[in-house]
Image (cartoon, rainbow, N blue to C red; front, side, top):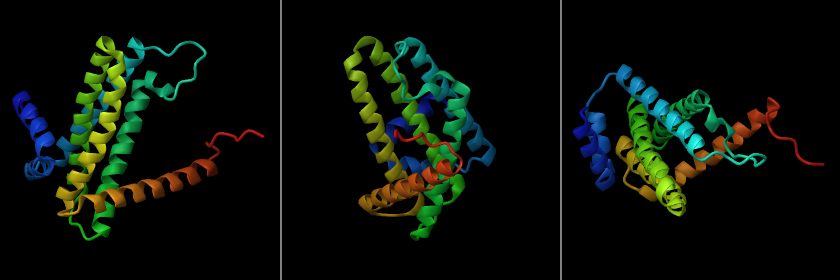
Length: 196
């Protein structure tokens, strides 16, 4: 894929995400290419997060929400696991509801969502340097873009027609995953202690 192809696909993703998803799936790239794209995407995301912490350090004594942002390898590893898990859920839960998507294609679509979010992440860093108040708006837009693309790509992956139903199932899955993860974290003693 050339840079011009990348730009064209990014524009197509914003205009017609389902068509862009079908084009990506139709390329038939081997699994090795999909894994390499995933590693590249999370590596770039980790680097951008690290650059962001260098440009906008947290003041001394102030608690930070994501202290791992200063550790790009750890952040990239966590993102890699999250994307693989998300792709597994996109494929598996969709099939439970009558879809026909495969994990390989869900992984490719999840990587492309990450690539689109990288563009927003880079823009957010630039905007933070020029017009800091607008950076927060870009953060909200990134969340909205993630949800919208995930719904549209899931529809394309499984052949679903209802966006609201996909969104509802997605939120239900996220809540169930949050419950399961909190249970495991509590069992492993990783949950923060409650004040007495």
